[in-house]
Image (cartoon, rainbow, N blue to C red):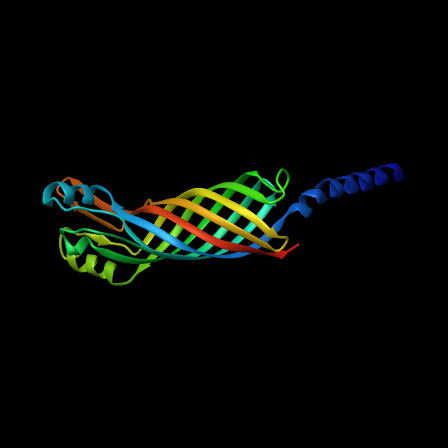
Length: 222
């Protein structure tokens, strides 16, 4: 019986020793970033507007700000959550309705993989990341769409949207407690900003674009 107990203790000690290097590699960072978002509305309603009314549509560029929480599970894998303000929208020289300023608050949750990391580089890290996002819009642009579309065709203008985002993240370790980063990402809303039924056809319009952000990360736990 004593040998069995000793075996259990040895197994537990081995398990703790095996897990401890992984745990020691885990690091959590808090960060802030600022940059630009370049957005355009896409979908069947936009195609319809271009074809029937010859409305031109182009990107609108606006500011973006983010608070970031990054958890490195290992040198090569991390999780990232963000709380962002993004000015999206659309530009049209032919129709003032489609020259929209859309104010959004976005919460993306991403998983990232770093082929270039602290194991193989002293100063640099390069990651590829992707995940879903929850977005809520506010402001006059959404109200203008509601006023133009809501009375007809049983249309729906939604301030909520679920999206996907993917991008790359480049980091430079300025010091043990300062990391500068440059992040570029593409995003696309899966649920539409505008949708309505006309006969057998359903028309939709939603946000799509890219962001370029620059910021700093600070470790909050060793």
